[in-house]
Image (cartoon, rainbow, N blue to C red; front, side, top):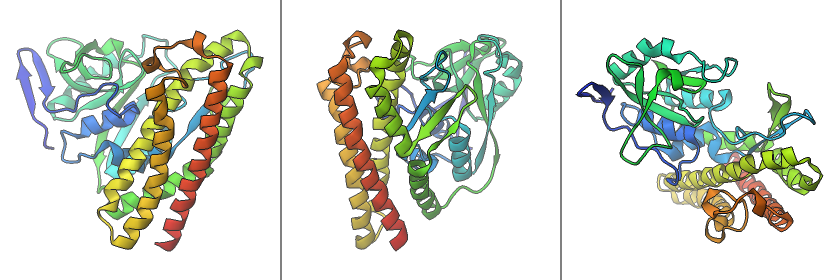
Length: 349
């Protein structure tokens, strides 16, 4: 453990935890928080490498409800803190993540104040804890206030240079402790698992959720997403509004994911011989094409109307939705091209 625990008056905190925040090309908060938490340990990994080995750098996921009168769209579509990705990461880093999820308890009564001694003990030992804050984005608990229930969070919503003070009773319905350690993946294994996961994410059609519905993956997710844009006019007003946030949020995370994929391949190119470097570069070029395709909206602010556009639900008209469907169709063709090249690379390896 490399972390340094210090005392500042009544604050006990771990120094050097990477600051979190929006607009840092780390929109997948689970991986952003994980990079931050591990940065003060003897097992620090980059955001891009964690995104790759988890498969999140290569994933598209879109949730669609099955109850016609109930929920149809969900902001959980692109998040990373699900069992499959957590397990992949734990295997790679060789550090078990113990995930405690309490969605079955009433909102605001999740009971994490009962875990305060364990949280404080982890901080005292120099090991951060991850959790949902007041808003359900993954944060890092890196300190606490003595003789109180207050915790210091590094989160995506705090002021730059400052942590967020939150009572343990205000923690959202998830907490992740780091447990037993084993050997982490060697570099070659890490790289190979990332490539196989990219193919798996594209081919896997998805899985059922506890709430009646389906998390679509890969090609199935993109096609379902496009279909929902095309069918938007036929939805009731509740579901039209409900789709808006998951729509732009999934887009934002998708851009972030493919940017991470591009950077991951670029970092690998320099480690290979000229022949392998050339083949990896051909893969990276396709992901870079996706980045350019999706990234245009941050400059033009004409489609996928997230907060960065200054536009709202009322601006999400038929022409915008039509243009978005075109972008997703182009994205899917590039996705097929990228996965095809990944397959060829593995076959020739």
